Length: 150
Image 1 (tube, rainbow, N blue to C red):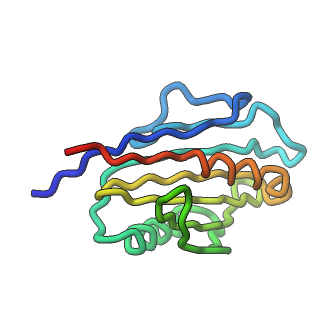
Image 2 (cartoon, helix red, strand yellow):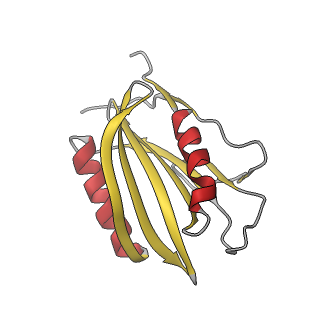
Image 3 (tube, one colour):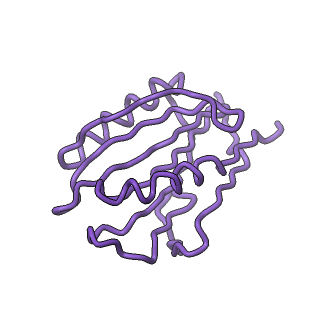
C-alpha cells in the first residue's frame, strides 16, 4: 500500500476578497471578489488538494479536463502548458465555459507533489479577464508546497 502525506500548503488571497467559511471537501480555500463587475459575474478562486491515483501529472490533468468537459456548459480548452513556477513543475490550463449568460474564462494551475495534487482555479467573465489576469498570476505565484518529512 502506498500512502501519501499532504504537503504543507499556503496561498495568498487578495485581502478584499471574501473567503467561504465552510468550503466543500477537498477545497482548501474558496474566495470571491467583493466587487461585482459590470459583466455581472463575480471573479473567484478555488484551491483544491487531495491524493492523486494517476501515475503522473499529465495523466491526472488529462482525466480532470475530461471530467470538466463533461459537466461544464460549452467547455473549450484554450491554452495548456507545463512550466516551472517557484521551483515546482506546474501544469497550466486556460479554459472557457458558460455560467448562465456569462462567458467565463478560467486559469488553472496544478501541482503534483509526492502523490498529492493541488489545483488553483481562478475564474472571471471573459470581458473582465484582462482586469484580473495579472492578479490571478500573482495568486498562483504565492502557492507554496513543501513536502512533509516522512
